[in-house]
Length: 139
Image (tube, rainbow, N blue to C red; front, side, top):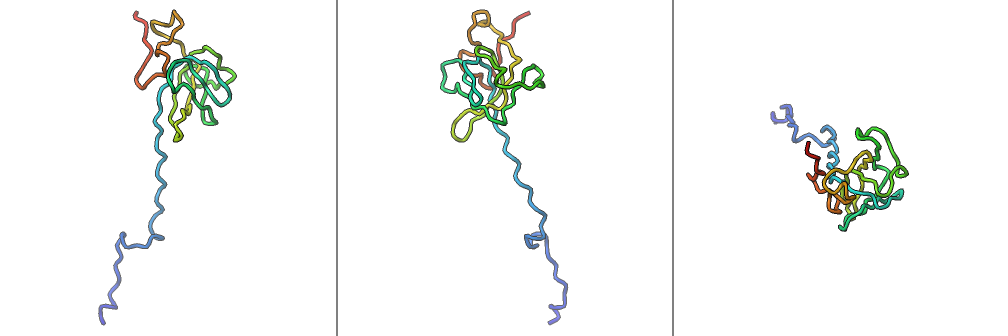
């Protein structure tokens, strides 16, 4: 009966859930963004279509899409500023439904490379794959 008089020791693992500090919500998983460098075929308020022959040539524009005019990506732009035939850069990610969601669109880009003078695509008509960069002129 003397055992009942001993103070109870409770370890952190045995504490009730109400006494534990609130668990932080898991951080939002970082989206895998794929670079885009292509020529605009058409654009609406919700869809960008680029020239080429691949299946992934349509990009959803939503309220989270950031459109900028300048190379420093500081001057905001709208879809009305985008012109057919214009070269654009940016990034996109794949949505759960398989669509390409445009993350950013940059209008202050120019086409470099061997086909620039011919008006062709430096990316062979496909959106740029990760690590692809337009050819830089030799100096």
